[in-house]
View (tube, rainbow, N blue to C red):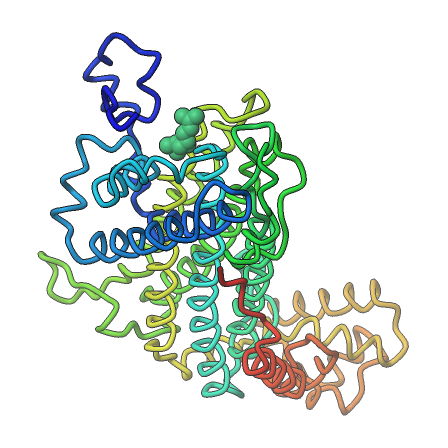
Length: 475
Ligand code: ARG
């Protein structure tokens, strides 16, 4: 048969025409054309796999591969041509078949032997996720590098560390920056997990039941850069856990970016003035000439909503689906593509904005030097003199109250006044009460002591250089 009554992929058993609005409604080519490079790669692997099982001759494989290459090239360079399939191609799989038939005649209809779009779409989408995860990982590495450079450049600058948004204890600015870096390093691990979860090839699973032609699944997987094949054909066409894992990783990144954004928005306010926003990543006001607004950070914080929305959307789509491919699954792609694009952009902007930020070291130092931040150090001093901590806490509380009564700074209380409150106070008390002394005491690994922070910087640098924060799988 060299004639077909229509060129739909499934028109044979239909007599009536589809409802026009429904026909447009069910198409996915407008967005799944983004999967075309992966579709072509899978088609190439499939064409080769059809020869050993006697479906294709060597010549047919050659012709099909050449045609696929031509289609890939034309789709890349001739957008009007690709666009011309907009009204007729149902999805990216249908597009390739139509283009193949245009190129090869009836031979183009042979490639779909022994396979289903259900396995194709799962395979294409997995390849996309593996690629996307490694692209986002590069964005994270660039951001980590911005933190590293700032942590090095500002080593030694103290700031007021906060809990509950209240001044708590002095820390190093570099320690604060590295705290963000650590969160983003965890995101890399989550991206790698998502890539590993996508890294299994469904081809050979058929529509649900497997393949009747003894196709070499492992050869196809290897050719496509997968390290394994999926285990169960029915699961393979139903499973979108890899997409969930990827969006979850993106949500983690966005949430961390949003927290970073919030810190910088607050720090840029006149009340804090800890950071000086760069012109490059700020905008002005159309009304108030004096304004420099932290729009880059606000937009990063704002866009996080969409990423979280994408995760919730896919979870909701998947909830309650029966086992097997359901058309609902077509809804998995748009939100993931959009979330990926947004996070890639957000990371690029954040990386640039962190690198371009200037820190107001005078303000940071001044805030860190407030005596209130040293109260815990004073209690620790008493502990070192043998006072149980709870009692030491009470004693310093009394000192603070007494100083308040006398209207003086508690760090300026004379020794005899202190001794009246507790005999444990001694002449070495005053010198234990500086920002530097407080910082130096935190020399535990992971602490904010200068030595620990220098070690943390070296550690991050090692991880970035050695790519101990590994790059994800590339298909
Ligand atoms: N466009 C479809 C999707 O994105 C491809 C799979 C279609 N399969 C089917 N049985 N209709 O999920």
